[in-house]
Length: 264
Image (cartoon, rainbow, N blue to C red; front, top):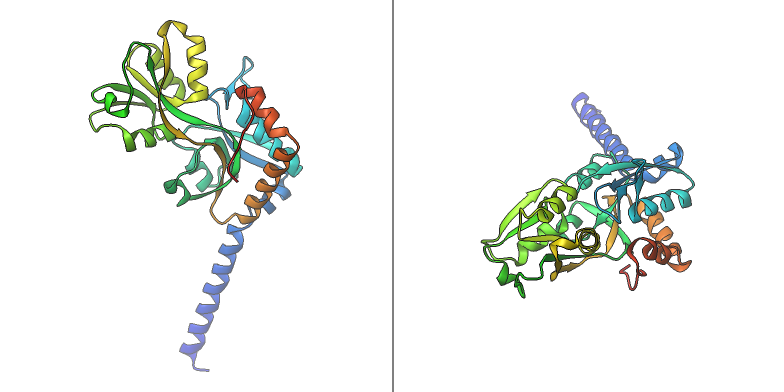
């Protein structure tokens, strides 16, 4: 075999080995979790009742309970990784987390970069404002200020339907978004129904109410592209927890209502 040809063949084999190695690494998240006995889960800590911190600064909420449930049924311990709406997907893509359980809604843009499990909890986004502020349609939001968390689902959805002259006031986390609306910095708020319900209960003086539905968007577990084995295992756990009533009990505990009909 000519020397040049042998080099070409050797180079080709080397590339094939590297490609095979890369493919194997892309598929081994579940094996790594089981070998390390640790599941790293990105969770919210500023989005009650899905995720917040208690008086001892420990994470609590529906998403935290879900993370612990998956880890328990995998037979491993859970490592909770606090994230914001803006960085939760990058944490998954850069392997800082094995899963994202952080009020994550599914849409076409996100499906291009990550995979999703079956839904595990109900969730919806809406626009909220004072009862004396007339808003019956998205056209009525023209010229009005709205507090919204940067990169969150409600930020994306409002952009699709609101008039171009809506005055967005974007904040880096949900606590800052809620505080801005409650303090009167904005006329309206775009948030999840659960978060808004807690805000209204804690701040009756603002006399706020639900105005417009942005999206009925159940919560899904985010999984890195190509991690089919981990995705299948998570879906198996979710299906089992639906069947035995665990998810329904969890939803009633944190949201005050059952899971209803969730998409698979």
